[in-house]
Amino acid sequence: MVYKKGKEFAYFGHLGCIFASEKLITTKTKKEMKKLVALFVIAGMVSFVACGPKKDKEAEQKKLDSLKKDSIAKVEKAKTDSIALVAKNDSIAKADSLAKLKDKKDKKDKKDEKKVDKLKPANHRG
Image (cartoon, rainbow, N blue to C red; front, side):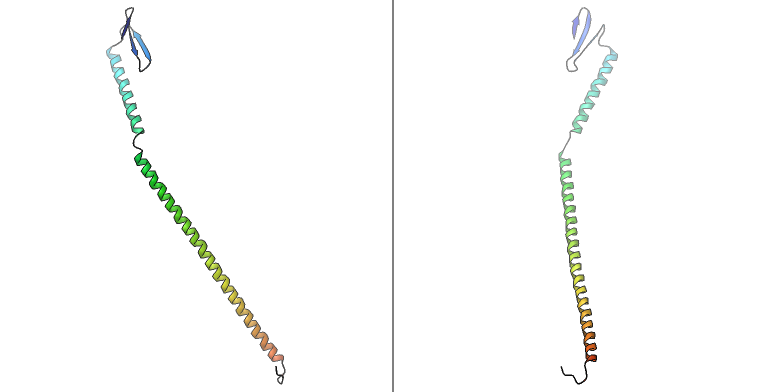
């Protein structure tokens, strides 16, 4: 405290303020200052807790990233498997349709041969 011309002055350097009054320190101001100090202490504790351990968060983030990569890999594998299955089924369907077409052509050729045989004379050699 600094005394100047019969008045008390209090300088709180850490707060950057100067308070002046005839009677600076009273029981009321003591209680208010205790509350103010308690408020600052609580604010400091909260700031320390907020900036707390990051290792847990980093480990959790790594776990989430690995799960994300695994799920992406599974989706990609399922995608390639389904494309391969579609290609296989498509080739099988194409082969089946070609076989059916060939069978139809063979049946048509046999029918045409029968018609030609009917048209040929009986004594024709050839």
